[in-house]
Length: 339
Image (cartoon, rainbow, N blue to C red):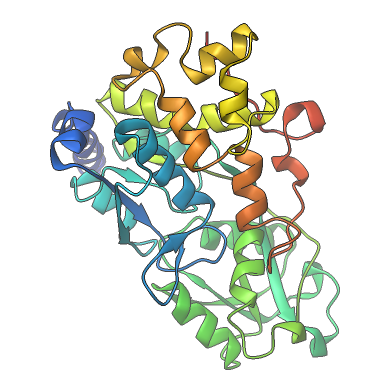
């Protein structure tokens, strides 16, 4: 038994080394091919979702577009690879994609055993439950005996197990690989409950036959910090991805928007001058032009613009900023300074 455990541990370590040892120079590779290959969901409104012409939009897509702007000065220099939850980490480990920006939860196991690094949190979330209004259920504590639809290969199944065991409730999991399969199964009545991140519930509810017939219960049963992921072993690429997100958060805090960035660029504020590349050589240190953050803000916008455009109160998802507000507004979004 001990030999088997040691062998398994060595296998995990080898996977991490293999994933990290073959990736030095991701930025150079991206520059050489002329685009960022970005792993996204198979369609989650507000986060990464294609329209009928194949144009992708969403908060996670904006991170990919921002990388294109930072590297090439062109936010369209991105290609998208739709991935299921089961496929996503293998695609990144194998080099099929350069970055995974796909509503993916940062956990200790994923951070330490897959040869991957999380480069920040672009959306703080938590797992919830959706049910049909006609059931008259008001709380997740009333779900004992329920059949629950969800995705395979996610933290969702583990969170459900913990929650139902802690509350001494029975349940049955009905799991599918593809998100649309989960939606279809729930919509057709194959299960009583649909569980995933709350943001995902609001998004997937739009795909149901009668969205207004379903409610999201109030309980949040987990912490789900979602953010972009890269392979270990390439610090330059890791730094660029995380500072791309930080640039958008810093821009919001400084009041720099896609509409006023040119005006701000001509101002005297030293902090803004550093962000927009008219003072210092911060882009050069990241392996890109010093106007990297200017290009991000001009072409994609700051964090607030991305949030409001994709999931905010004026969108079909109608999600309030909540914990995703800036730290100065009582939220959790906080970025180190560019200096």
